[in-house]
Image (cartoon, rainbow, N blue to C red; front, side):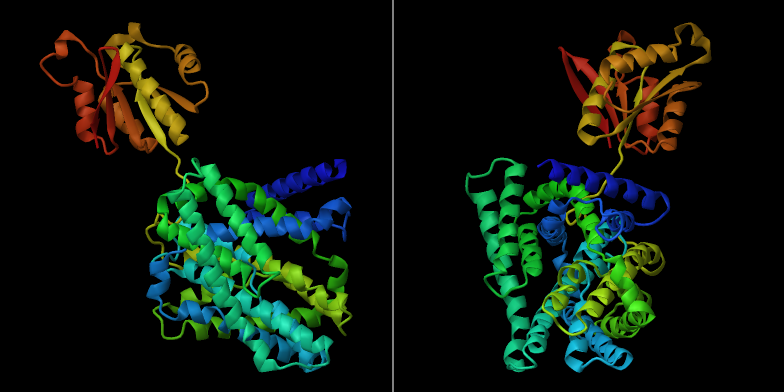
Length: 543
């Protein structure tokens, strides 16, 4: 137990520190996490306890379940359908063409027999959902390529492509270990079977989950909904040991069905998954890095690097361009798709060592090239995706129903020390807690009213009393109040302006005072005017 806790702390701290360092240097965090995993892994410093290495596959699969489910909850059906058969072609052409190119390159560069060369091809051609899914979801959240559904196409096609690669690897592994025996055409039917069964079982799981969270009385909170959904997702992941289907695809389809049939629940579940993924990604990428055997990379050498490079530069390019032929996807967008779909990690880490374990000839070299492909393509694909997206993709309007958008809200409150201003501050703090927003507290004094100035120390005491748990910036200004409020609202890009309405005899014949009226008339941001009446706050708003 002690060693397991030590391993958990080591993984979390290493992943967080290296991820932040990579982010500060301008690289995706996952690159730092992968590097941190390599360093603390058994092939460099060997700091991870043995128990964590034994559980590595299971932990990585749980993290992968979270991100695949999250991807399904973000798929845009209309964008995929708008591209016709492109998503279907992306499900098999890039994998088949890259595997073919890798097999030919391996046969002639290394001189291996054709079956073993193809075996390596099917290992190398698989794209990594662990790397690609979070990157595509980030692009969707930022709006890059969403008009033509580029991230959705990569997500949907990449998952089906993995099913093709893994199925073909299993077929060729049988042929290699059984000296080429077996009915090829019969075994090839496993590919459509895996995809079709994956879709059907994912739909079935989605139907059951939607029924439980909407029709039955078994759940009453979003956390309960999340537990039910993850439970069925885990069942789909485990179930592929009993039935021949793509569990990756099934989990995504389940999330997609929930999004289509229960969009409100899907949005809430996706928000909670975001929190889980903050920790899950650390475990996933650190443990993938720990599986990278630096020692065997040297066995691959420059020739192994050449095979990987030829597979990417020829096979992956041909596969993506063939899949998008005849579509409205531009040449720069196709080039981006090549880079966005090139990262390798999850599948290679999972199956790269199987040939060696089964005593396949050249098994050690196969593992070395698989490891080298992770080390080269995962960082390159991640960095290339974020670097090229602004240059090659068109930025469109983000659909908040498909992804969670992190927004930083700013509320501006005008405070003059009156009871009305205090009530406005109280209402703003209530909203700030719900929105996780910051407050800009403004105190403005006309030049002829110097004796009524509130000091910054006094305002700090007010803040400490009312809103000590909220980030607040205090600003002291002189001049025309309405002008200063509007200038500060523009400077801080305030989402809302809160003002207090004074119940004073002078204002009985008008709705609001001069300052409030001027702010309401000229503000680009919504203005919330708080009026206390009969012990309760009443809201007047201009939006």
